[in-house]
Amino acid sequence: MSEEYNLMLKELGVDVELHDELMSTTARLHEKTFQSRPSRPETMAAFDEAAHAVHGSRVQEVRAHRQAGGKSIGTFCIYVPDEIALAAEVLPIPLCGGTGWSVDYADKMFPRDICPLVRSTFGLAFSSTCPYKTLKDFAVGETTCDAKKKAWDLLGFKVMEVPQKKAEMDRDLWRAEVRASKDAVEDLSGVTVTPEALKSSIRLVNKKRDLLGKINAYRKLDPPPLSGLDALLVSQTALAMDTGAFNAIAQALADELGARAASGASAYETPGKRVLMAGTPSPLGYAKVHDVVESSGMRIVADESCTGVRYYRNLVDETPGDLEGMLDAIADRYFTIDCACFSPNAERFENVVALARAYGVQGVVQNVLQYCHGFNVEARALENALKDADLPSLKIETDYAEEDIEQLKVRAEAFREILPDAPPACNVRAGAGQG
Image 1: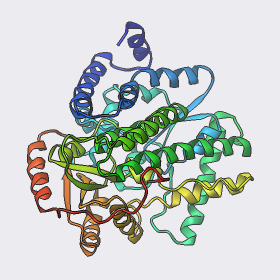
Image 2 (image 1 turned 90 degrees about the vertical axis):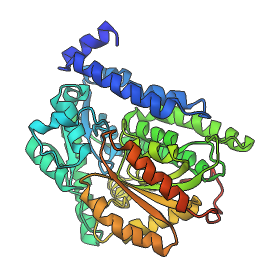
Image 3 (image 1 turned 180 degrees about the vertical axis):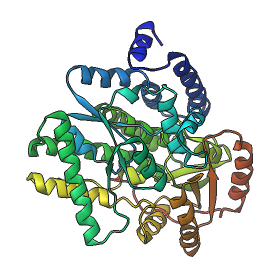
Image 4 (image 1 turned 135 degrees about the vertical axis):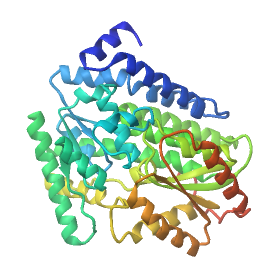
């Protein structure tokens, strides 16, 4: 980093020496996990750059926005509607930590036996290595798990109440929460959300979801022109980048994948069993389980997670022209997200099986972060649903540490050996619409 950039970090209250240590660790892991892979699309270099820019030029962009009088908020979950913040000229900044480097720094506030994502995120803040700590006006939490809810209480964050069921009364509650989020960002920015501004932001974010769907639809092909690891990186950067800038490089990647598909180019040097990754999210900086699975001779061709199809599946209805209709459309789209916080959650099991069939997978790997009780308990019910669909599955429960990688590879290699030779027929045309 330049002296000018380090000076900016100091002004933001960042411990520059520790920040350099963090950047060195994440750069090493990124190169080892992503950039060392053969047969990558050329456009993936732009996503590599975007990943590194999260603690670089993206910080400068957010700072410039605030210096010009703009506002920003921190978010931790895909339930917080970006469309509304953007319509109020407020930048939403995802804050979820994906590095094991910072986990121990959270111990001054939190118990050790809670979600690694929570500990990583707040460890970055407590160690003064997250530049966004002081680049936000407030943080918005949500009620998708107990560890998060109690963290929000402890730190005094604003909270969106995500219902735990999907009856009509729950939909009404969620619509009220979405309207409350509009009021909150309007109060923060002093900018009134107009129908014109909201319509524009809905189209912008829908474009991002549509591009992600098109990119991931190419993974239905055999051979896939994009690896599971690179598809994960695309989704991770989608959460972190300026939306317009992301859409530009995502379009370039979609175009390149079309050409690679036409020529029969593969993202893999050798064929491997096709698997779907299901479960908890893998935020930027964390790709351990994806790396283990693909290093064990399998090809991840679909992702069912908040850094996968759950993030981009379903668009906001662009039909309404009035503000109230648009707010309902936004709420209804986000209400379709099938998080494990919902009970019952048969919708998720049906979606996983349908996704597995559409992408012609031979098995499913359930990636569950340690202490993520919602997904961990639900894993048994999903295993039963997959068994009924004749789909073998493997549950991997782990954290952000690297010590168990070899053990996980042994389990992954053993799982690969029990997978059937032929996947179910895939009759969905690659490159057509959402994934």
